[in-house]
Length: 222
Ligand code: SAM
Image (cartoon, rainbow, N blue to C red; front, side):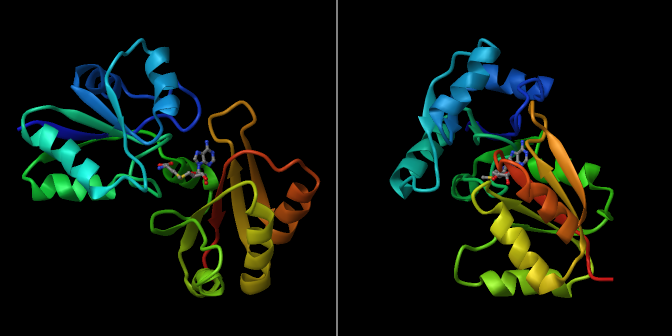
C-alpha cells in the first residue's frame, strides 16, 4: 500500500516551500496536480522530474479511482494544488475521501495557505475565526453577507480581482462600516495590505488598478 501525501505549495514566492515538501515531491512515484503547467514551474525551480497526472474540480470519479488504485497497489502520490494547501477552497477532497475508503494512509505535508498567512498579519482577533471561502455569485449571496454581519468572530474570505470591489461594496451595505484587512498578492512582488474601515479600504481600492489575488479579513460583530 502506498501513501497519499497532501502537500502545501507556495502561494506566490517559490521559496516558500518546506524541506519536507521538497523531499516528498522528489520521493513520490507521481504527483496529482490541479494544473500541470502551474506545478511544472515549481518542479523546474527545484529540478524535480516526476510524472504528473491532472486532478481538478471536474475530474471524473473513474480517474480518481484510477489514482487511488495506483496508490493502493503500492505507488506513492503527492497531491498538490496550484497554490497553497490542497482542499482549502481547492480540489482534492474527493481524492482524499476515496483514498481513505480504500484504506490508503493520508499524510499532510503542511505549509503555505493564503488563509493562514492573511490571518497571521491581520492584527484582528484570530484565536477563533470563521473561514467562509469564496462568496457565492448568485444564490445565497445576501445570506452570506448576513452571516458575516451576525457573528462575533473574525471572518476570512477569498475573492477574485474581478469581484473584489463588488463584494466589498455589498459587504458594507449589509454589515456597515466595519474594520477590515484586505491582503493582496501575499508573498509576491506587489504584495500590499489595506487596513481600515470598509469605507476607507473601498476608497483606496477604487483609486487603484484591481489586479491580483485577495484575502479579506473582516472584524466580528462588537
Ligand atoms: N488552497 C489555497 C490556499 O491554501 O491558500 C487557496 C486556493 S483558492 C482557489 C485561491 C484564492 O486564494 C485566491 O482567489 C485568493 O483569494 C487566495 N489567494 C491565493 N494566493 C494568494 C496570494 N498570494 N495573496 C492573496 N490571496 C491569495
